[in-house]
Length: 286
Image (cartoon, rainbow, N blue to C red; front, side, top):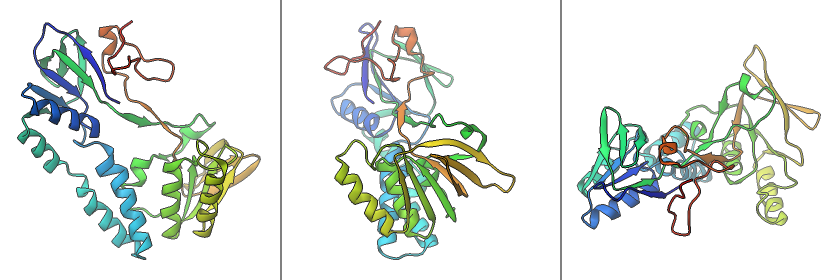
């Protein structure tokens, strides 16, 4: 997400969050000659190059080329720069952006704390992205749940993988794990995969996943999750129990806006945890 808040009496622009949006905004603003500070406590460039788009496509490519799992993991990590953002950070600094590696918290109008520093801002650009949702299923907090970030940075190939969520991310991960030999069960509560798309699209994808060896359960969500002493995960779906070595939740994401101190500016997320904005993506203060 990329939202803008202004405090006209202060100088400079602070970009809070250095993912793909924040990196691009900071670079473009610096090119105009504005003083720009980007505050990020994670990887510069965000999830796409290191934990999402690039590594997932690398794994699908490796599967299509019949590479072994260890070779595929090595290729994935090479494509993802071994989750090292040194080159991206250097390029940003060379473009004239000051990079502060810390968590940013707004203290009040025109001032933000980043680690031990206080930084003044005229304009604040909020680009803090989103975080994976854990679905509200009974017992899910009693087991270790993978997110897509975990799945795309792990060296582990589960013998049996349970995937909650049949959207684009869940389907993509289910496909490449199945192609590498995992016994995959994909669970989607809607009547078809990719529920935001026409039914025939989900049906076509289901056929492809089943050809790859995945089991697809639609029309019923997970009712209960429990683990056992042997480390297995059991999920009850419509009265039926399925078992796996790993549980992967791919049931959507929510904006990462809590704990940023935005309430100090009179800004509060709406019911969907998003920041209210006008037609120019400027944050609406309450």
